[in-house]
Amino acid sequence: MQVLFISLALAIIGGLLLSRVAKLLNLPAVTAYLVAGLLIGPYCLGALGVPGLGFNSLAQVEGISALSQAAMGFIAFTIGNEFRLSQLKTMGKQAIVIGIGQAVITTVVVDAVLIGLHLAFPQLLSLPSAIVLGAIASATAPAATLMVIKQYKADGPLTKLLMMVVAIDDAVGLVLFAVSYGIANAIEAGGISVIGMVVEPAVEIILSLGIGALMGYLLNLVETFFHSRSKRMSISVAFVLLMVGFSAIKGQVAGVHCGISLLLSCMMMGTVFCNVCETSEELMDRVDRWAAPLNILFFVLSGAELDLQILGNPLVLLVGAIYIIARTAGKYYGAFTTCKATKCNEKIIKNLGITLFPQAGVALGMSLTAANLSDGAIIRNVVLFSVLVYELVGPTLTKRSLVAAGEIKPEGRTSARTKNQPKNPVHLH
Image (cartoon, rainbow, N blue to C red):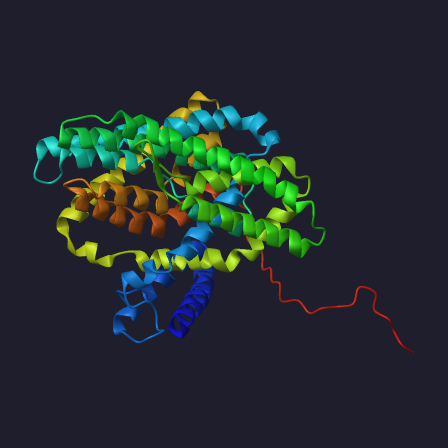
C-alpha cells in the first residue's frame, strides 16, 4: 500500500514539474503529463524495479484503473455542462450534423484505405480487422481536448462547437463500432447478428442517456437540501462517483448484453443538471477544481500505459502509419465538409478538424473488444501505436488551432502566489 501511494505521489509531482518545462517550450500541460507517465512507466524508471520509483509493470498501472475511470467520469460530467439550452438553440443542429458527419466520413475513408491495403497485401491485414479499425478511427478523446481548453481558458464559437461535437462523437462511434464489429464477426463466422449490430448498441445508448438524465435530476433535488458550498460540492462528487460505479455494471437480459457507457451517462447527468439547477455554473467550477489532481493522474497513468514495445514491430508501425494518415485525412476533411455544409464561419471550417485528432480511452476500449477476432492482436497494437502518436501530438495541434481561431489569448505572467493583504489596511499612529 505504501508503495502505491508513493508511486501516485511521484506521478502527480512528476507531471506538475514537467508541466513547467512544457510551459517554457510553449506546449500544453497535457503533453507534459503524458511524457511524465512514459518516464515513470514500466519502460523507463519503472524498469529499474525500485519499489515506489515509478510503475514496474503494465499490470500495476492497470490495477489502479479505477482512478482513470473516476477521472473520465468528472471529465464527461464537465463536458455535459456545455449542452446548455441557450447554446443548443444557437448551434445544436450544426453540432449534430458535424458530429455524425465527420465520424461517418472518417470511418469510410479509413475503411477504404485499409480494405485497399488488404486487397493489395492480404498477409498484412485481414478484411475483418480493416473494417473494425475504420470504426475505431471515428472515436475522439474528449479528455485531452477539455484539458487544453481549460488550461488556456479558450472561449468562442469554435470551442463551444468542439465540446458538443466531441460529446456526440462518442455515441456515433459506439454505433459505428457495433455495426462494423458485427460485419467483421459475420465474415469470420458466416452469420450476421442483428442483436449485436443493432439492439445492443441501441440499448446501451438509451440506458446511458436515461440513467444519466435521471441522476442529473436527482442531483438537483438532493443538492437543494444543502446550503454550504463544500457540502453541495461533496454531493456532486458523490453522484459522479455513483455514476462511474453504475457504468461498470454489465449484465445480460433475454440474450442481450446490457451496459452503460461511462462517457454518455456522465455527460447526460451534467447536461440535465446544468439546465435545471440555477447555481450549476458555480458548482461545476468547484467540482472541476476538486478533480484537478485526479485529472493529472489520469494523463500520467495514460502515459504509463502506453506500450513502447510495439515500436519494435515493423508490421504494426507500417499499418499504424497508414491508419494514422487515413484517420487524420478523414477527420480533417470530414469536419471541413460538414462545417461548410452547415455554413460555419471560416475559422471553424479551417480548424475544427485538427482539434478532433486526439484519440485514447474510447478507442482502446473498442480495441479490447475487437481482440476477440482471429486477427485481433494487430487491431490492439495499431490502436496503441496511434494513441501514442495522437496523445503526444494532438494537444499541441489543438492548442494551435484554437490560437489560429483567435479563441486563446496570449498568456500573461500570472501567478496565484500573491501575498495576502488586508482589504482596508489600518494605519496606526
